[in-house]
Length: 85
Image 1 (cartoon, rainbow, N blue to C red):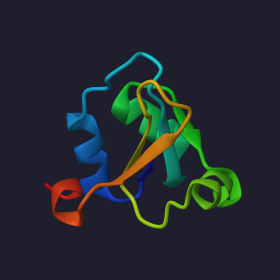
Image 2 (cartoon, helix red, strand yellow):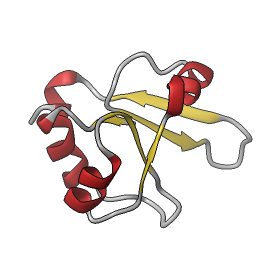
Image 3 (cartoon, one colour):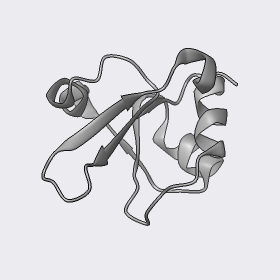
Image 4 (cartoon, rainbow, N blue to C red):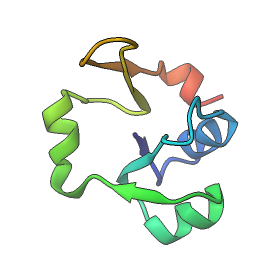
């Protein structure tokens, strides 16, 4: 989950290597067409903040991943300093 209007978060996203082909980029703010072009990847938008609310995401960037061997999701909040490098 990233804010596409924050250049630092977009730059951080470009440095990420997705662990699987099933990884998805979800915007909480910003332009989907601009981000798809910039990141050269399909981008989704969290319409009305539904996913953020359901997953308890209150800051971005954040990474959501499945817990191996379990049915749970892990939400990692990326420190502002790392997201802004």
